[in-house]
Length: 271
Length: 162
Image (cartoon, rainbow over all chains, first blue to last red; front, side, top):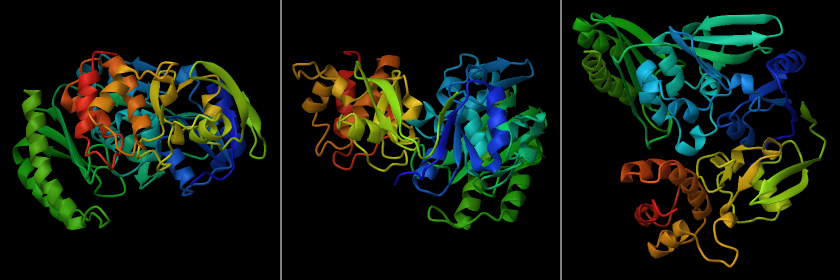
């Protein structure tokens, strides 16, 4: 199908972008890579009075090492981050998760921030951000605010972003090699039925996250020694949901079986 | 700032296969439709229109992109290459196309233009890919005729000859 008519605006700066957002508010959509937004426009699941194309704003196309975190601008594509020479060293969880995001062709245009702003509950990048405890940077004419991943993503396709704000950047905390990521999908590159990520905080603590189980990624901290019991108890309490691809019971089973492997792998990588 | 209102038709200029061309488009016109209907280059095929099948893949500034997920106005001023750019002017197939022919890598040919453009980009970045890497990139395309074996064989044969 073809999208319904909309205004197309291509600002040259972030200042122009937030001015347009103040003018249009909720009726406008930010267009960066378009790999989530344009399919929804084509299928007429989403309507927009205006698209604000930020893909030519050079100031947003930056990967900035802040020391304790890597700040990725709204224009950075998933393949640009994958090709970043420091990725495996500074953000090994992203190095493991990004190859599962769509396909080579969609990663060429799809952005890191766009995936977080879209907030699909089974997406890999929001899961990585939640497990790492990262932040998002929101800008508007009113100023700038920084929200933790858990505060930003609220539910399926629902975030704390106000209508006049742009998700200008995302900050992933730099972490050591103690990470692991696995997912189950019908085909490689499809949305995950269940995705699991783990980060070793220190010798005794692991942060474990799961995507595809609820409206947003779920994260729990657990002691490395008792993680088997903690995972089993968590899995029993997860609601999950039935859809075309999987039953809730299968999702719980997948989590029950994947999570111990992912934790074990993360601990092994940390050593 | 570029501004196109919803009721407007504007002139969109870009380079298609080395030629500077321009035609009218609405803000909502998809690049795949612009290339086919406004510019008349029908080698690019349109399948699913939501980025899944890969048939519409073209190069924008050398980068393999779904033209059904790109607006024509977004491609303004860009260098677009489609399957028509691959063969020589006298019709001689390029090495990748020849390898497809030799390995029976196509039957109906609907998916082929997109696959050729994807691997034109990919092989320029990674001239000697493993079979796993080839299959990973190929996972961004759907082919309902070949079972993919011939396509993988063709890309293996073409790798390093481009």
